[in-house]
Length: 75
Image (cartoon, rainbow, N blue to C red; front, top):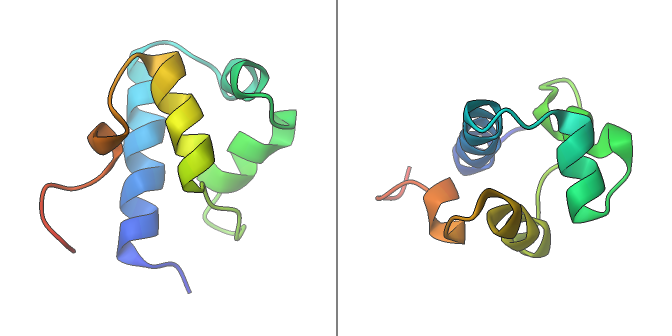
């Protein structure tokens, strides 16, 4: 069962990735994960999730704070 916080983070990363014009494959290359990993995370039928280490790497690629992926208040 997907938790609200997990889905919020996944949606926020996808939104920011798309705003910056970064494909799933490009992001995967830049954070050194398999090409299918980002797609698996963004696919609601899969159970893949981001961990803090990966979110930190994504923040570097997107030149933002890791905090930008999280809600201001608890969900």
